Amino acid sequence: MAASLVLFFVVPVRNHGSAGRLALEVVVSLAAVLVIGWLVLGELIGEWRGDTRGLTGRHLGLMFEFVLLIFALTYYTLSVYSHREMAGIHTRLDALYFTTTTMATVGFGDIHPVGQLARGIATIHVGFDVLFAAALVRLINVRVSRAVQTRPGAAPSGEDGTPPPPIGLI
Image 1 (cartoon, rainbow, N blue to C red):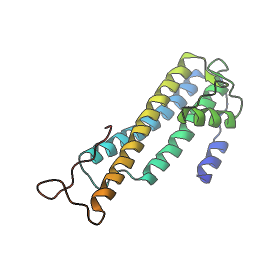
Image 2: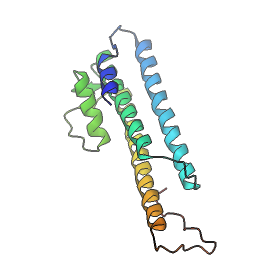
Image 3: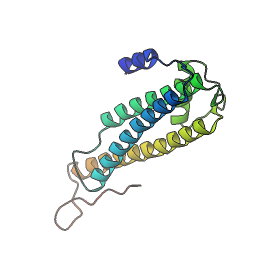
Image 4: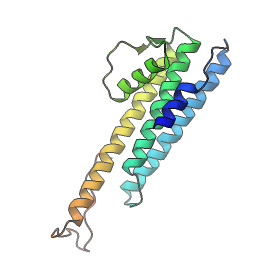
């Protein structure tokens, strides 16, 4: 995590006055988030189908860290290129703080999206947070169900001796 934070604080973001450059940076950031979302969804589908090699807590932790930094860098880039997109982001730490409070669903209101582009990105961000929370709940559910079924003295409940599928949100 330390290396990722160092990278976040040293990635050059300068306002060159180019709307095209801003669009490119936003598209690259959103593409990265979509790839991570696609991977999480694929892992969730694998878990749902009974694939035992699926999502681990380490996977979720790495994805959380990556997405946190991508969104923070996106919000910071928006604030550098346009002071009309984000209210309250003046430093990278402000962007990291806003991203963390958004991902934690706290949202103190001191920093918020103002422009349409920033609001669209924040909407995608919240959508990803819901997917991430569902993946975390599913992972916990699967792990607890497996632990209960494999503990000594636990009788399988299926006719063929297999444990029943876990009950979950997904």
